[in-house]
Amino acid sequence: MPARGHLDGEQRSEVKRRACDAATTEDQSYLAHGREHTHRCPATDSSRWAPLPSTVSSMHDSRIDRFLSAIAEADGFEAMSDAKTVQLDDPEHLVVIEELHEVVGVGVAACHLHDDGSHHWAVETALSPGLRFAAFEDRLLGLAIDLTPHGDAISVWSRRHSLDAALGRAGFGIGRELAHYVVGLPFSGHVGDLPVRTFERRDANAILAVNRDAFAGHREAASLDEPELWRLLEQEGLGSEGFLIAERDGEIVGFCWTRTHRNRDGEIYRIAVSPGSQKRGLGRSLVLAGFGYLSECRDVHRGTLWVDSDNERAVALYEGLGMTQDLVNREFVQLTAPG
Image 1 (cartoon, rainbow, N blue to C red):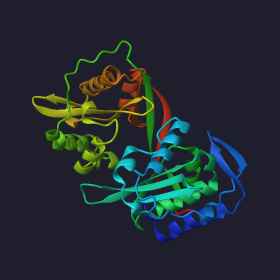
Image 2 (image 1 turned 90 degrees about the vertical axis):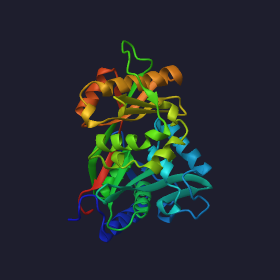
Image 3 (image 1 turned 45 degrees about the horizontal axis):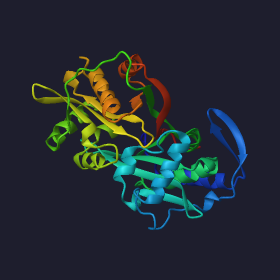
Image 4 (image 1 turned 30 degrees about the vertical axis):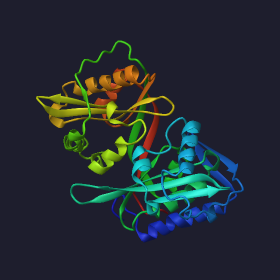
């Protein structure tokens, strides 16, 4: 059996074969909120789908931005993670599907390098709600996987049931789950008193070190590097004014990076505490500082964040502050050869 997370040439061919088989079936089954339904596929023929030529060459193309915004509005959550929408300007790592001059599907792959020299690819796809049938999910997934080098480790992130089913058909299994938590702002009965300051350029190396140590064992989160840090800071809603730093004796020991969304939600985008400063209440204080900033300075009335579902201590903290879970983002990894 191949190494966990790796697709060899035979497995890639199997993913493609399943996609083509599904594309020739007129009646398709898909999963919606845990229930199986059968619907007739639209006239669109997914077997003819192929990457667009260079007319769409960047995640920053306005058509892709409109497409992702429309999906976010329809689904009630962002279609892709910020890391995918920020770092991929290379058409070799982007596949776009267009029907009648409108984008209906996007697949991206991002390479994450690790301190030990190893790397893996994280894949995400976004598909128009009207095309979330087996044929189209399978085909887009196959095209996105083809963006990665043969033999490299791959994981695929999914926020929709129809893609979960496609990944199961392709031989993937759940490796990690991120839970999305929400809360009304301002907090009632919770007051933060942690002294914080905003991020400055001179903080970059210390922030990366705290992030790497805090997220040791989490490949994507720990792989944040300086070029990506600067790219993220240029993103709308992710500026340095909402990047809060906690210090002890002149040393950075934690941070809470906030962002605002176009729907006026405020998110704790990333929060980290150095291992030597954990279990002292600093995480709770940073959460209160972050949501306090979003409420008071950005006029946000709903706060959100993502957390590993198995991080019991963090989940207990957030639920203790009155936050509730409303969404799950699953990382799928290759477990066995499809069959």
